[in-house]
Length: 107
Image (cartoon, rainbow, N blue to C red; front, side, top):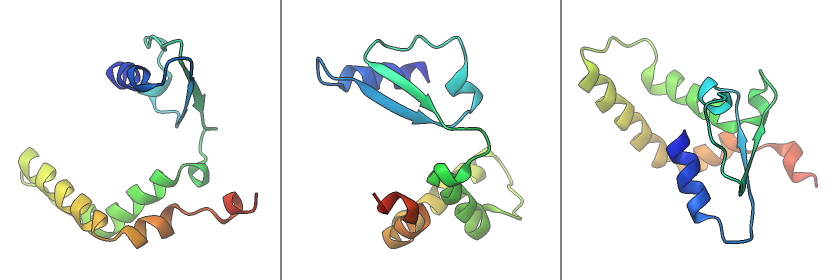
């Protein structure tokens, strides 16, 4: 996460400021992170998947390609996850429909 923050910070236009919306995963909230001065972290409330559409993407992928499987090895896990991602990116309309929030379009 530290490398991620450092990379984002390096891409923020001088004089600008970035706000990153994060879930409350432990690596997002650890006190060990050195938050760059041009970034503010904005954590989502706990247990609020309706505010974090990627949670719905993960669920879709599990439901359709990754659940109820027996993985033979680490390489098998990686290969099947890559296959699932490739299946998903071949369906951009599905990603849009899963991630869309009607309440966000009212404003």
